[in-house]
Image (cartoon, rainbow, N blue to C red; front, side):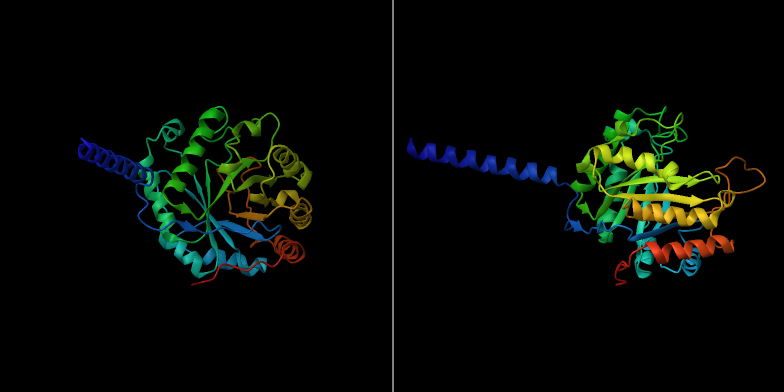
Length: 325
């Protein structure tokens, strides 16, 4: 009887070990490679970023921008459509130029509710695995300007609760895949009364966000840092102390670039933000209209060039760029 009990106990312990091992395999399925750890310091006024037409795949426009700005950007951004893979070759090229990739993943052709319930997990795991394999710091956003009505994933189209569920699912999945080299940027449109929704309702929680991004533009001569960004920064700091990055910004020629670009940089440092990502794109054309459709580039205006270089020199702090190898 005693030997039979011993055998039964041994079998029970073996089965328990198999169950525990199996649960661990299920929990960490897909994480065969080591977890990638890489972060970015949250230093004030340390980041200069840029969005450029044709980037990726090229880097030439960034080089031209750097020459005018007098500083090599340490963030270079692009908008990734659904379901584009992570552009590893471009990320490698950015690293060779000592810059960090900044990618806004936008679910234009996807259902935010379906993302939240796991429908797109195969794609997202593949994306996360590529980011993990890259191994260096990556800034990722998802569904930028969700508090505004002009995108399919935003205000009036998707409920804040659904967006929050999708954001949390996305971040959790990346952690499960070992992609802990992501700086998660939760990106708002700067508050526009009568247009944008209440921003706190879209907040997924501090454990799911690394930095807060705010997108805003100077359209007219009456615009100031306070009127464009100030209200939103104040609102954000009521519910989180996460660092703030001006994640998409520019000053239109109609606003008076020489004065207002300097106002942008001074406001950036005064409000102790991480830095600014300049939207260096020409959106002006015969078929375009309205204040949002202007030439935002600094390269073709001597006033913009002078003001921008001065703003960089006076307000951005020296920041070591990522190593090139």
